[in-house]
Structure formats: structure tokens, C-alpha cells
Amino acid sequence: MELCRRRSGDDAVWPSARMCLRSVRRRFEVDAGTRFRVRMNETLSSKTARVGDNFTTTVREPVYSTNGVVVIPVGSEVISGLML
Image (tube, rainbow, N blue to C red; front, side):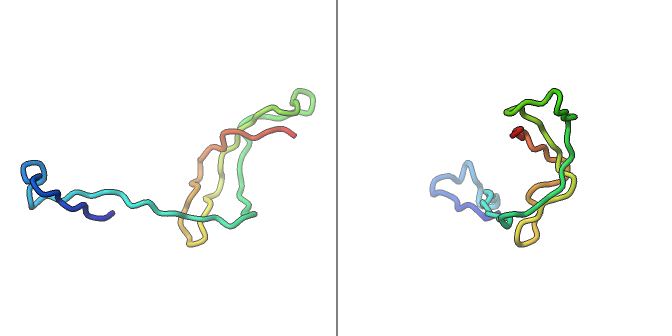
């Protein structure tokens, strides 16, 4: 977080004792080729599955950025997989 500056003439809205906070965007990276464990949310069968069918999975282990921050927490759902 960083402090916002008061605009002149805004004393009625932002008294001098009051501070405004705004979020700072941070960028995180995960190495290409990183593998992580997921759990299938549906049962797939070669008898019923067709090319192009979608499926979902849930992340079982946290995925960390290159500097050790969790960027994909356990329980996150991978919305769409695709049968090939």
C-alpha cells in the first residue's frame, strides 16, 4: 500500500489527520513448465468422453511464484480442461 496525497481544496473531504490508501499492483511469475497437482472433479470414461469435452480440476498443492509467494492457492478450480 502507498499513501495518496491530498488534493488542495479537499480539506472538507480529507482532513489533514486522515490518510488515503491505495493498492499497489505487484507482478508475480511462475517458471514455465512448473507442474502442480490437481484433482479431477468429474469421472472421465473412454466410453462417454468425446474430443472437445470440458472438465474441471481442483488444485491440491499451492503453486508458488519464483520468489516464494503463493499465486494459486489450494482449492482453486481450473475451470476448463479440454479432451484431446
